[in-house]
Image (tube, rainbow, N blue to C red; front, side, top):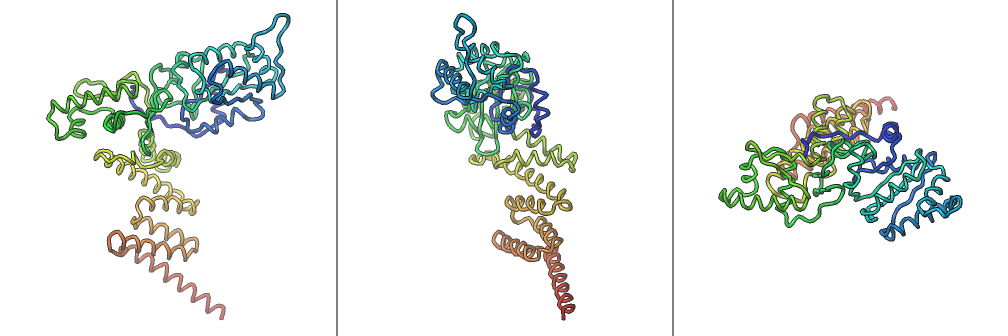
Length: 424
């Protein structure tokens, strides 16, 4: 596994994508691309005149798949010419029909439904029969792209996924197992685009996530986390059995031991959403005015870390990451208070969903409501805080909050009195 340096994924940029795909004969979507819909929409723009076909369960046989492709071209008005003299094979007929359509892209979707043993050869033959101006775009929700890695590594094919793949992926020139790990939420793992769903119990899965989240740990740290009550010899035995199960299920050896530490192996490229989240948080802390960094962090934090698991290290990590998420929300709200107060209120409300008793956030919202003359919402906000503090701690708001609320209510009353006198 390469060193897990987080790689920040930029938002979709059609100009950037156009530059990447220029003169590429084969274009593949990285599994679970964050911008898959936007990228697919780019290839299917009317000006590109793309030929699009999505495989179905009937297309698992390659012969049937090729027949369906040919039928689809004919349905779109293309004529599959047989060529001059001797009959041309079905592949050439298909290429002739696609060429006649003057498409820039041939988009083949759902290709993970087709037998991978023969599909690559089919695609290579099809591409050779097409004009060099036509690129073949391949997409599958669970695309195992190991068979394409040699071509990706040598630049003969391009793997895209939000305009790049995770750090160290095949598009970066490596040729090894590509693992995607998503810790936010219930925790999901993909090896070479295929989901890892069988773990032989919770222990191997928990150990895997621990290694991913701790790319350099001592054996004592592992033992104290997982088997604190076992003698060292027994813990060692259980550890190695569990570690072997992890390697079997994921398809690679997770960690190597050297110099007293377990290190990430060098033969695997790793994408880890939590690492990207923390990189965005650190970038935001270095340059607080960088809203893009805070937004990236917020987007990555879909749900609490491994929210169904209750091991102590997971609970502590979940709390730590939640605080970082709240920090990002707060920074976004703080930066938007003047130029977009309504949007700032939206971010503050998300903070309060995480920590409803944060008085400082309630005060900021009261200030924003006051500035907009929304007295009813200001009062409701204070009452909401009163209710939450009473319920959770059986206390009332602090002096700073009470004084702020009193100043607003006094000002509102004075304004109402002055207005009434003017009318009379």
